[in-house]
Length: 556
Image (cartoon, rainbow, N blue to C red; front, side):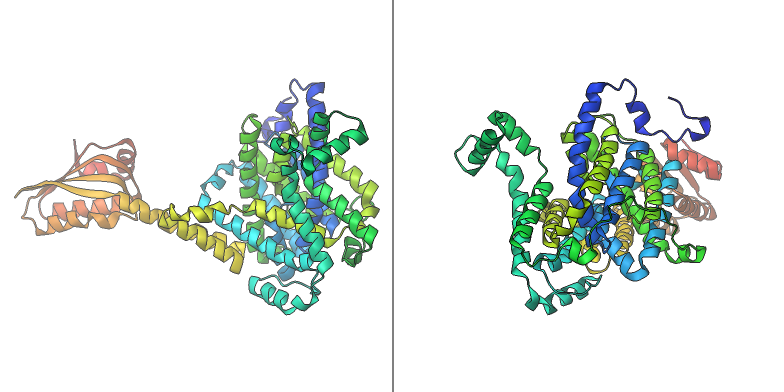
């Protein structure tokens, strides 16, 4: 299938995936989509509630954005939707600018993402240093944990503030209102999620403990072989198991817990309505900072997720520019249905791959599954305790953070430690926008400093009438001061000095480097001497020819 020429940059992976598509592949994609759709339901609700929105905002974002990213994306198996990384960002924007402006920021970020992909700038996202990514990821994870303490403990806080210190103050001021039932249910959810994957460890299955007895019970009730019973149980998503069992437990015992019903009145059992938020260019100008934050975080998260999907699936490598265009379309559309920012989601994508997905069809089935579940089971959602969703989000935050990086800081360079810890602390104490801005500036400054240390000037020989130097590395604006020894040698030498520069080890040259070489040439000529260049490499030679500098000196 070929697209018109004017859509040449637009190549969704779904088109190539449909070539030779078989019934067997559809069965695998349908099974994977069904599984990941069930997994996505509690996460979508939890992300929306934690962001200060109604649960349906997360659900419809997962449905609409998930379908659009699957249809238009550049990855074969990536699942799109609301993500934990956006919780802190969305909550902060909501508190500062309001819901209408959050929707406008998300739509504008969608336009920005699409343009990044359309103009083939997707690879620029890879230039964000790993230290910054690790720093803000761990910082967001800490903030997610802090934001969920209220519901985990059942604290009677009317509205949680957005900033770090105010949240700590609000929590400490209301510690006398702890609900032990909420704490018990939340901790049971959290511990259950950690334990669930380990229940089906081979060594435990072969033993005689609780896991073995549980599987034998499944075998007896269902009348299926033990291996099949193990396989069936292991495929049940932990969040769904926790959500269903603990909700039923709390409802049956009539525990005094805050639920989705008591806080939000439930989930609408109907499709979302298209609505345009109030829009003006003046508003867009004021929302520049949150728009860039949403776009940058969405780009980084989606492309990181796509790279993970490539590694675990073994399928053809994703197209980063096409993926950004799909993310842009999704983020532009979902605000008109009351949705929140969307991006690629690593946990759901990995679940999709491990469930057997082979193409974007699984992402479409995931969205359809969510629609069916929501329309059929929306009345039951009113009974879901918020403490259970808090437990799920604490588990997500734990898996989201790269905590081992803190232990590895001893082996890391001072630059890496400074950038990572700086980004982490700025994310926690201030916000992600400040952390990214300062982190990128700091990374650039440290990079310039490191590159300048790699540039060296070595004096090879010096006589009464000549001096020879060898240059190593890159001569750019951060390293020009290292040519001062040559200038000093010229100023203290007698008239007619011949200066020879061996540039065989000079790899690159910028305009600042050219400018200081021109100053050196003028100083030598002024004293009746000559500048001779030897061993020019391709890039420095091209730069000198383009500027006309090469015509003014002798070259060997």
